Amino acid sequence: MTINVMTPCCIAGCGPAGALVGYLLARAGVSVVVFEKHGDFLRDFRGDTIHPSTLEILDELGLADRFLGLPHSKVSKLSVRTTTGQKMVLSLERLPTKFRFIAMVPQWDFLEFLTKEAARFSTFRLLRNAEVIGLLEADGVIRGVRYRDNAGEHEIEALLTIGADGRSSVTRQAANLPQVQAAPPMDVFWFRVSRHPGELTEIGLRLGTGLGLVLLDRSDYWQVAYIIPKGAADRIRTQGLDGFRKAIVTVAPELHDRVAEIRDWDQVKLLTVRADRLTRWHRTGYLAIGDAAHAMSPVGGVGINIAIHDAVAAANILWRPLVAGNITRSDLADVQRQREFAVRVIQAFQSAIQSQIIKPMLEGNEPPSLPWVLRATLRVPFLRDLPPRLVAFGIRRPHVQSPSAFVS
Ligand SMILES: Cc1cc2nc3c(=O)[nH]c(=O)nc-3n(C[C@H](O)[C@H](O)[C@H](O)COP(=O)(O)OP(=O)(O)OC[C@H]3O[C@@H](n4cnc5c(N)ncnc54)[C@H](O)[C@@H]3O)c2cc1C
Image (cartoon, rainbow, N blue to C red; front, side, top):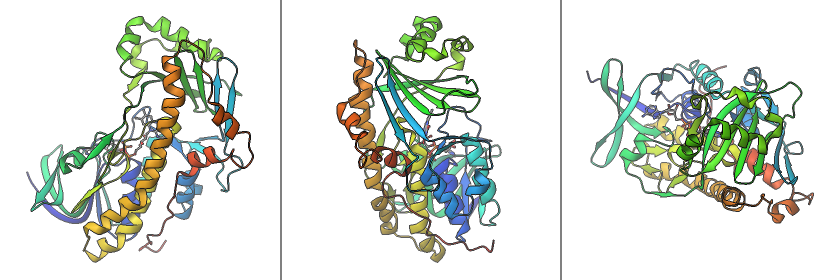
């Protein structure tokens, strides 16, 4: 059955970018339909880091207190340690914000929270189990989406379609937008082991010979990223779980009493790391944001923050033309203009970390050494807060300018 419905804006994907741009446009009085292919948000090992600038945005919307009422842990320090005893600590504790921490909140809780808040606006509609399978196009203009749900395939016409469907975006592929690919040197295995009460609260990068781990404090467990050379997953699996557990302990000896909790490869999920960027984010009637416009490497854990910034910038620029019912290519180009520089700088920063620290570490037969420039930077009072600022705020962070059409 095909239903043709006209709406000002439809949004493919209800991750951080889609949920927030949906919230903001609906709040400004624009009717939006958000499509989410899954029935819930319960997916393991997605990004769960809510950074200070995202907390500030929630605060501008009057949502921060309620959001921080959800169970979460707070992390104010990001550390890098090598097996040879070198150590670097990035601290968020001196940053000029009332949120001097990263809130670790399961992404499904964050998305449930945002969509529940958005549902207070009569202009917000979320369709779950609704997978966008293509774009409607006529005379070179994108005019909405085709989607599939339990009842079959449908069409919705829209003045604007926002592609927020993540790094495997169907919509950006259908829009045929040009992109550049980066070549991250690594993939990541994710798993969890229990965390003892009183253990250090931090996000820690541990570097050993040929192996790196990232430990994320999740209150009662450690979420662990095991960094492997690109394409090496099958080789490592073939070598067996015993070797895998032993390697973990060489880099994080304190986990020796817990690695036995990893009993099966089913507990270890593979993330194929990808990084790319569209060189044009839009076509008439279509705009890509978040990972759909620029798949982020997991380095620095900044993907959610960047997706949130895209959503705020898009709503700031587009709410007025959408209310007026007349959206132009130049409105859409403005969104890219406002966000592209920030994305390029952050991706360049991630590339530098990958080539200067991660690649040598993965290739090395020698224990890793931290680049002296970075160590020196963190000793100079004026400079030491620059890397934590980049992680906490990104670049050119936007503030909410779209209005609320609803009386609270
Ligand atoms: C394993 C892993 C760990 C990560 N860790 C971190 C971290 O610690 N911190 C951090 O900041 N970032 C992290 N990231 C990156 C971060 O999750 C992303 O950058 C961020 O979620 C991008 O948000 P988004 O809304 O653009 O896309 P996504 O979060 O990918 O959301 C896209 C949404 O669209 C839905 N969707 C996809 N296709 C369709 C379709 N055809 N129709 C309808 N719905 C669709 C998906 O189900 C999903 O809900 C991690 C990523 C991964 C994969």
